[in-house]
Image (cartoon, rainbow, N blue to C red):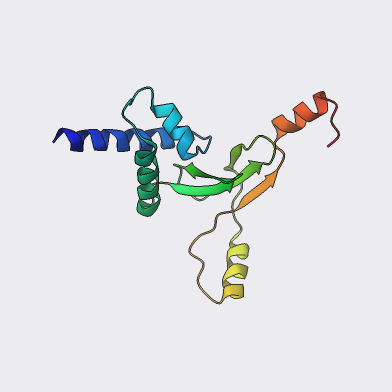
Amino acid sequence: MEVSTKHFRKRDAILTYLRSTDIHPSAEMVFTQLKPEIPDLSMGTVYRNLNLFKQQGLAVSVATVKGVERFDGNTEPHVHFICQDCDAVIDLMDMNVPESLKAVAAQCCGGQVEGCQLSFTGICCNCLDNQIKGGKAV
C-alpha cells in the first residue's frame, strides 16, 4: 500500500505544480522543481505522468520550443506567445481564437473542428528591452 501512496503523492505533486505555474514547464523543469521535496522522483515518473495528464485532458502540450516539449496545466482554450530569444511561453488570455477562423479551417479540411491551439512566435517585450538597452538593432 505504501508504494501506491507514494505513486499518487508524486502524481499529485506533478499536477499541482503544473497547475500552479504559468511558465509552461518542460518535463525537466518539473523534475528540477520537485526533486528537492521528493528525493526519489525520477524523470521517467515525470514523463509518464505528464503523458497521462495529456491523455486525461488535465494538461496540454503547448509547443516544442527548441526541441523541448512544454506543458500547460491550464486546459481552458487560450492563445500563447513563444519568445524566440529567451524561450518564454506566455499566455495571451485576453485573445480568443475567432469562430470565423475555426469555420474556415473546417471548410478547408472538410471536417469538424473540435479545438484550436494558436501560438505566436517572436521576441517578448523583456528581450526587446534588453536588446535596446544593449544597443542591438531589432
